[in-house]
Length: 67
Image (cartoon, rainbow, N blue to C red; front, top):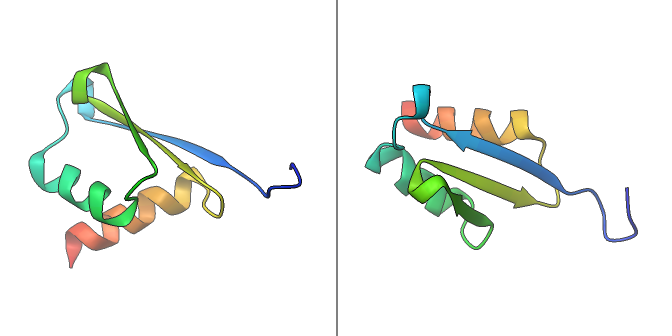
């Protein structure tokens, strides 16, 4: 870990290369505003945070979608 703290990069992609659903994208935008980099023309997103592991990121999105 650097002096700036840990950085996790979490790749979130649609199943089988499908584009991410609009609902899922909205959740990502809300939870990770300013931390997203879109890849593969919107079919995947790279989330860069200082406090989160990829697993935590996935859990947060899953919980939000269930709510």
